[in-house]
Structures are given as structure tokens and as C-alpha cells.
Amino acid sequence: MIENIGIEQFLILSTLMFFIGVYGFLVRKNLITMLMSVELILNAVNINFVAFNKYYYPENLQGHFFAMFVIAIAATEVAVAIAIIISLYRKIRTIDVEQVDEMKY
Amino acid sequence: MEVVLFYIMAGLILVFSVLTVTSRRILRAAVYLLFVLIAAAGLFFIQQFAFLAAVQLTLYAGGIIVLIIFSVMLTSHVSEKLDAVSFKKASFALVACIAGAVVCISTILSYPFPKPTNGEVDASMKAIGTSLLGYKENGFALPFEVISILLLAAMLGAIIIAKRTEK
Image (cartoon, rainbow over all chains, first blue to last red; front, side):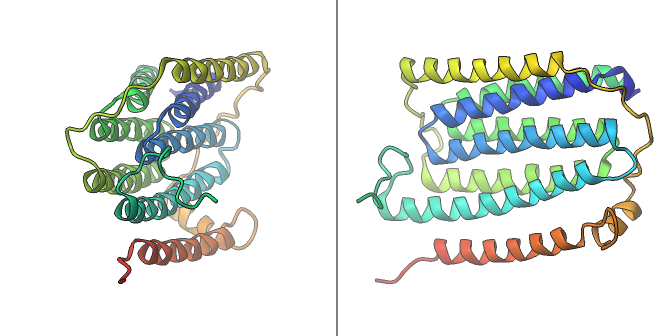
């Protein structure tokens, strides 16, 4: 059963996943790969919410609904971000963050 | 059984998320991210949140990955490789992330978690539906409506931003 897995294992897994996402966000220069790192971070948080719901508050579904709302907000975020990326690419032919400084000054 | 499944899913998540942030081909990184999301859905299945796992599979693995792959196709060549990350930048980022992970994991390991309450989770469709539209205690009617308005606004905004402007 699930009782053989401690909650620490879920938390350590999501911590590692979160910091892998942070590493990708710091290192990558392409806008789409940065967006993918943000998805990793959001998913790590979801795993935490669901694990706490399952282990300590099984009588109501609050962690479950928070995870669902996080998924919905991630979907809107990706839709708007990709619209911005495509219109940026159409204007200046690149999506490298070091060259995208059109709105500066 | 669940323990073995958990370790398989955890290994898949860690390996493929490292590949997602280090792969130099964008399309491959997107496919590795797909595997990470499917393994996370597997974790939700292990904890008996079948509906959440289905949402994760359809919305994340089905919708968001397809959107990302479309935008990769529209903005870069399929066989294009990204530039290698400079050693200085990679090592600074790695040090920052390892420090953060060590602080978090040592906190998790030293915190005395109380014994889990081993109740059964009622994550059936009926319970989810009454809770999502309930306005009494443990009801989520207000956030549900706010999310629907947010989705509508984001979709309109995305259409307007991506629309070709005539000169």
C-alpha cells in the first residue's frame, strides 16, 4: 500500500524536480525552453499539493483542487506566452532572450 | 507493488527532467517533458486521484505539449541545435540550485512529520463535482468561476496578441 512510501520521499522528489526546473530557467536562453522549465516547476508543486492531501487531509479534496487550478492557470499561461513568442518571432525573427530587448528604452 | 511503481516513476521524472533542461535540441526537450508529465500522472494514479491524473494526461500531456511542439516548429528549424551553455553560467546556476536543494532537503529530513492519517480519499466523480460547485464548507464554486473567466480572458488575449496586424 501507499503507507510504505513516506511523505518525505514525495517531498524530496518534488524538491529535486523544482530545482532542476530552476536550473533550466537560469541556464536556457531560448524562450520556449524557459517556458518548459516553468512547466517543470509547476508540476513539482502539484506533486507536493497532492501528497499532502493524500497523507494528512484525506477527508476533503483541497490539495486536489489546488492542483487542478494550478493546471488550469498553467494552460492559460502557456497559451498567452506562446502567442507572445509567435508575434515576437514575426517581428524580429528571433526568440533568444538576449536579443529580445525591443521594448527597452 | 506501489513502492516499486513509485520508484520507477520517480526515476523517470528525475532522468527526463534533467534531459529536458540539458538537451540541445528543442524538439527533443519537448518530448522529454512529455515523459516527465506522463510519469507525474502515474504518481497521481498511485495515490488514487484518478480524475486529476486524467486531467494531467489530457490537458498537460495532450494540450500543452502539442502547443509547445507547434511553437517550436513555427519558430525554429527541426534539426537546429542550441548553442552550448557557457561553463561559467552553468556552474553558477548549478551551485545555486544544489545549495537550494540541500537546504530544502535537509529541512524536510529534519522536520518531524506527524503520522499520516490513513483515511480513504473519496476522489470519485460525484465527490469532485459536488465539491467543485458547492458554496458551503469545502466548496470551490467561487475559484471555479474565477478560473473560467481567467481562461476566457487569456484566450481572447492570446488571439489578439497573435493576430497579424495590417500595416
